[in-house]
Image 1 (cartoon, rainbow, N blue to C red):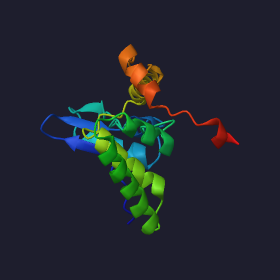
Image 2: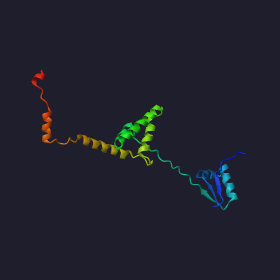
Image 3: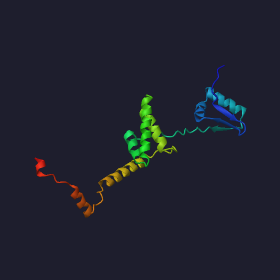
Image 4: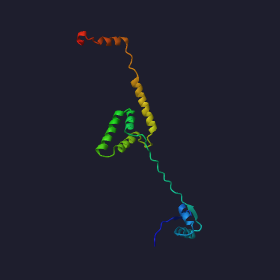
Length: 172
């Protein structure tokens, strides 16, 4: 005799015959093995309620994508940190290790980067990071464009006195 899948289960404690919506739909045709299985269970347990089993919801998280996260982005973001030098050394070491091991450099580097800057696995906020990079670059530009402190007149005259005039004969 051929075994078939159990499409309906009997819950004796709660007095229910439980099946999927699809199984009840197929049984409603009035013929076939699914109908016969349900009819047999109903005949044995006429006082039991027929219940449609709730389907388990697959709660798969959407894959977190990081559009724009490339090596240049990671390097720019690292440069915004206080310990940028140390982090950049670690970053370069991870890249070198991947190259030496002959494995894909980007996935390993990205995994290190996210582990370093998203340790709680809450999702690295690309927009916030881009803003931090822009703010850092603007601050750096402002600092580099700021003129040097003004030199006192006395200091300026001392600087000029240090300049040695070359005799005219030396220029010939």
